Length: 500
Image (cartoon, rainbow, N blue to C red):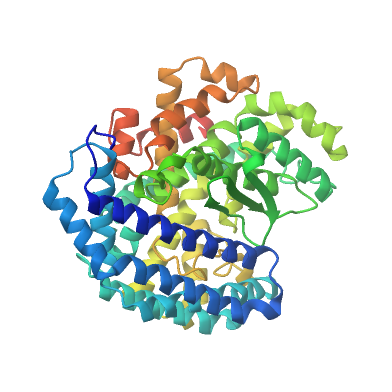
């Protein structure tokens, strides 16, 4: 029996069966990709690329098969009840099918193979700070994404097709207009935040933080906010990420710096936010849109909410300082106020994932502008380092000395994920709007957070966001949860409250 109280059409059951078969392949491919970024020996990279290409092609062929199109058409003709899970799944299947059938299976395999080879090349290039090691791979990735945009089709410019893959309903023009309005306000806030932070030493928390102690503290906090370690784990990689591999299997990763525990800590808090979303999706709908995250913007709203609106509050460190001092001898002569001051300290910096809240969105806008130029053909890969460095000087007033601190710092382009970066700022807007609404509807939340109790906030997010999967489009989900369309108001209010 369907969610709307009616028996699904027989063709609907066939699509579900096919999609659950696809999910088995996808989860296996995701495990291979997770292994590639954590434990795969270097000599195994070439064959791993072939494995990834195989699974990518297999999944694509299963979904774009002619019979799947027929089943979708049958369900559309049957008129599934509006508002139910079946209708929501059908809407997404139609959208995905129409896009996927524009891509030849051989193209999908080529893209997966290029991605799998580009990622280890990026890791080596970043470690050595040598762009030339990554350049031929990035040229291939960009060329593939340009072709992908042409195959998919677009409204006003090629970047539209890629952005739509990560944030349904978003357009390049809309994002550009939003970022254009945000940028001067962010610059103003960032300058004021830097002035306010001048009294906070940059090395306030520098010391010796053994990796084992960092692992223990990170796990303790992640478990406290609700991450289920019976269904997840934390490992080490070159760039932090979260993989929801399958029901009961959500993997987080981070990287460690021995002189500063906050890098790995906030990385884990961020990825745990992603993990909580994955663990909160309705398992009974796994393999269908109703059991899948709706967009990367919504996904990032969850990670940025826990990282910033929870983890960077002074009250958070008032509660957690004794446990941090227990794990780290370097903090024995520090205080909760020191940790809170360090968490709120702002200054222009090179690395996006370690940027403070006041400057973070400028890193995203920079990447959006560069990606748009790359896909539009105004910028070629060979010119990327110099172009990046010039733009970075314009945005932050800093001179990039090493590619590892510049155009090589993020893993996304090696993954072929051009169009992803704007979702980080969309996530920041969503995080602020959701958190403000949660605290308004459940006024006990701030006091509970201050005492290390997170169940009410997590429960609110489970109810308003996680359980819906992709039953609503991203913009509809935000409006249903908060009572208003997504806007920058709550985010800017949050930043001004923290820094001005």
